[in-house]
View 1 (cartoon, each protein chain N blue to C red):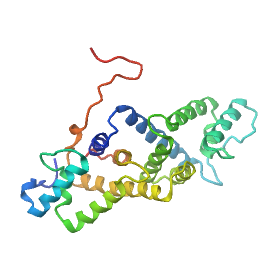
View 2 (spheres, helix red, strand yellow):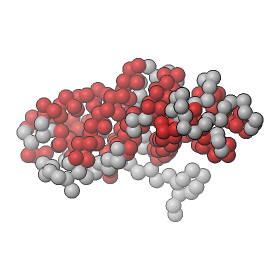
View 3 (cartoon, one colour):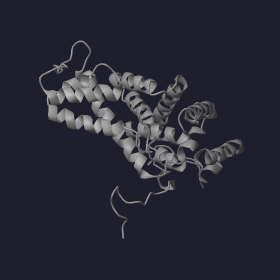
View 4 (cartoon, chains in turn blue, green):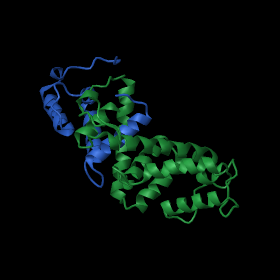
Amino acid sequence: MPTVRIRDASEYPEATQKLFELAKSWFNYDFKQPPAMSRVMAWDPEFGAPHGRAMKRAAAAGEFTRAEKEMIAAAVSGINACEY
Amino acid sequence: MKAHSAAGKLQGINKDGPWYEAAYVVGITNALNVVADSLAIAGAPLIAPVEEGNADSRIDALYSEIRCFYDRPDVPAVFRILAQDAGYLADFWAAVRRAFTDNQLSRRFKEALAFAASLTTRSGFGTSFHLAEMRRLGVGESGIQEVLGVTQMFSSYTKIADMLQLEPDMGDIAPVDSSPAPGGSSKA
């Protein structure tokens, strides 16, 4: 189990909760609760926000599609033996 | 890993075929890299490579195929080292060629995947080899930066997830491909 308590979305400030809505459009999925990683990155917006922007800039469609980039991310995660 | 597999499926790669292909590319890329980085050291290979123009016509035929596939005048040292056993090289090369040939995933994208896999495993051989292949197959500098960025950022996310021991929470949101194995039939 996680080594920290992953807070429920409702425990975050209202402004952050609005940002969680973006996760739905990013993943094209109507989450009941934002993914744990979204909530982890929201803990410190001064880290999570630029990190998230860099990720979205790299992962947005360009010469490769968004889906292809998710596949690359899955490969990177698999090689790093990250189950999440 | 489960999060991005799910995300990729939600973004449109929702059949299993491309994911099998991607796994084959990552696996065989790592197989090439472990030998190339460890044994095929430029200028001082630890196992003598079989030079081109040797007496074994099977090896010459394989070398010809390899040069043609990569459109280059030489055969990378890693293959020449494996040629110490012509039968082994023949099968290994057939797997490499099959994995990287255009199929449900394009060869261009497979090279990007191999580049990302090589970066992640810090393979000097794989990084330079697949970077050159990406460029040869028409990927521009912006495309290279895209793959670099995705590889770097998700090398960050994975370690954050591992440090906090996050449990997968997106694995079940992806559509499931219920089609049978190639050539097979659906479950009754």
